[in-house]
Image (cartoon, rainbow, N blue to C red; front, top):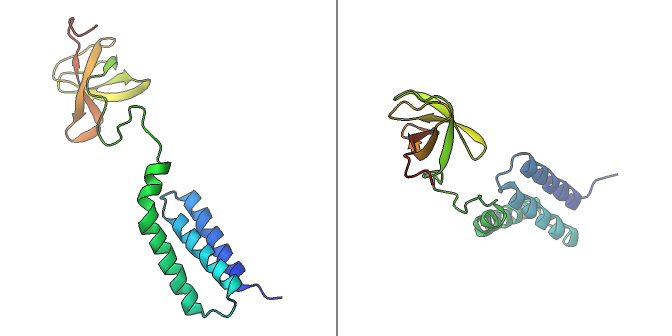
Length: 154
């Protein structure tokens, strides 16, 4: 009992598909398609040389990758809550200090239901409302905040 060559190519494609699901990067899916294209070709043209099969696999996989990856990423990529993915969108949002922030030190704020490490130029006590000014220059996971003035609390 020998296993058919088209079945081997199909199973290689299944392996690439499983790999795409384990390490999602939207790249291996094109190699899945390339191996299935070869499987279909070998199914209909049984006496195809291995070198030709490999060339068909490489050309079809890379053509699909370069032609469709960008389109696929924009189609299947999840959208952000604000609709902007590449910019820092927390600037100007209001938050509450959950751990006092020392002057030029660190504390903690709660913003959109998430706790963030925060820094400020002045001492800010726990429970005080603040406005996000941006991210700390050397650490994008730390937010720079300032206390809300009485006229911006509206």
